Image (cartoon, rainbow, N blue to C red; front, side, top):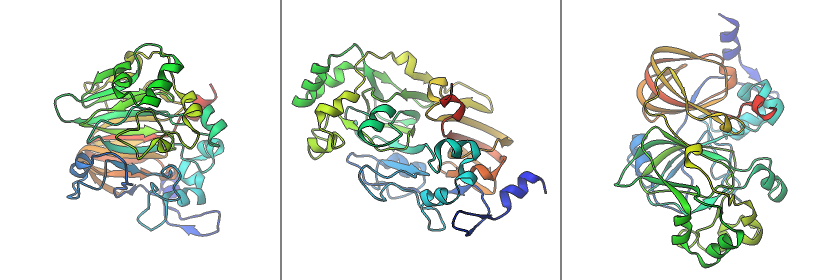
Length: 354
């Protein structure tokens, strides 16, 4: 047995002194906390489930709770533990030495499946600096979308203001709930499977009806909802408890170029296709794997979403709709079969020090 195999299969002792089972990839069930908007049919079809009304988001390998909740949003492992608690008990095995040195027991990543059964409201998310100052959290919420599927005649996302917008105009739109002006101010981008959209913190955005994505994001549930009427119960649910006078300070009001934020990757081939460029590295990484036969992956904490085909991920049988979390200590995991999958990983630690 190689040293890698021995490391992956030898029981470990966590901080409490309890022996853990061998560290291997783990298949995950759907985890769909209640949301305020419609959707879920695409998730049910993807996961081969009959219950299409469970909700429009599936939080995969989540150690993050919904805003102001104690447990809602967390992933439960097959052995009954919260993934959050398992990582906290043994962060080095789960995340690797380098990551654990920088982030401790924080995975620094949240992955979701999101099925927009209606257009989502115009909203944005705070930056690291804003979250640290006003919300007591290291992470803001930069995110990115990988389009898995679309339906309907006009699958569109809206990303960033087309022109610079004065603070007074944004405040007026929010105060009067002028949805048409908000939408007109954004860049509309028609999307198709394989497209990726990088959404920096602060940039206003909305996902249109019929767009089904894998979403990578920083591990928070911080949203400032500019367009709350018709979506949230009241304005109080839209500003993170800060009041809109303060919350709107996080809005990026400068014009954004879709060419800088959107990539068309469907035609890209090769065993591994990097889905984002270097601007995403301080927040998360993702590649699309095209395996026909076998492929060995370097050790890393990872969250896998299988798009097509069937095979194995280490000892775990996978097929379209499978989601799997892989601990760093699983070592060099081998993928076999004919499989197309998205591998999501935390930020590159080296990119934080550049």
